[in-house]
Length: 42
Image (cartoon, rainbow, N blue to C red; front, side, top):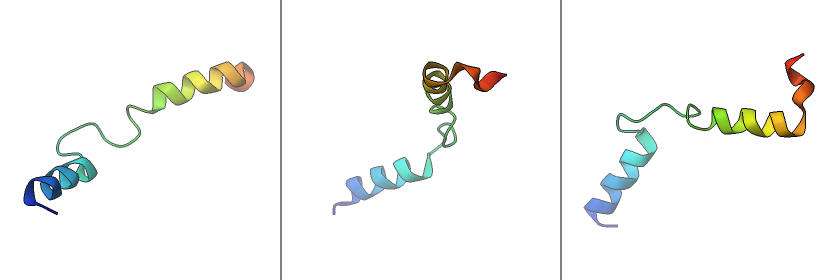
């Protein structure tokens, strides 16, 4: 593996200043739950 690919992979796995894991996914998970079982909020 070349150095550029290794560096890019490392950046992707360590977030490199991006949002923490789950922050971007959470709204989509809530929308999915709303669609399948809207009563969960009660």
